[in-house]
Image (cartoon, rainbow, N blue to C red; front, top):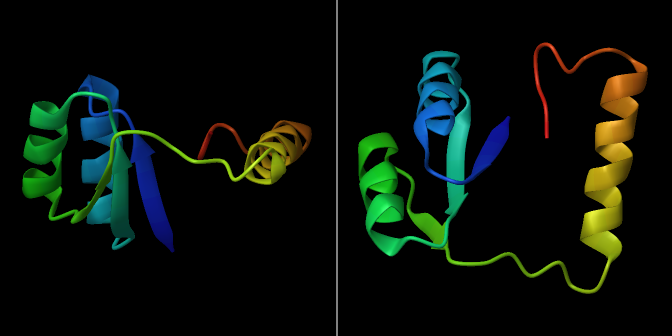
Length: 82
């Protein structure tokens, strides 16, 4: 499973380490602070780094919202969340 991170703060460092321990493929970061993003990327070997997300209109945002609603419906937010 591929995983990306929005933000490079304390909790995402914990999430990234857990994902790495589980053998997930850490592929991307989005963060507005270039320095912390570079540090996070180096620490977790993530090469794809972005300063902003392009939602290509609303399609991607709608897909994320739908996924989040489904996760809540099936009570899976304890394990994974958006």
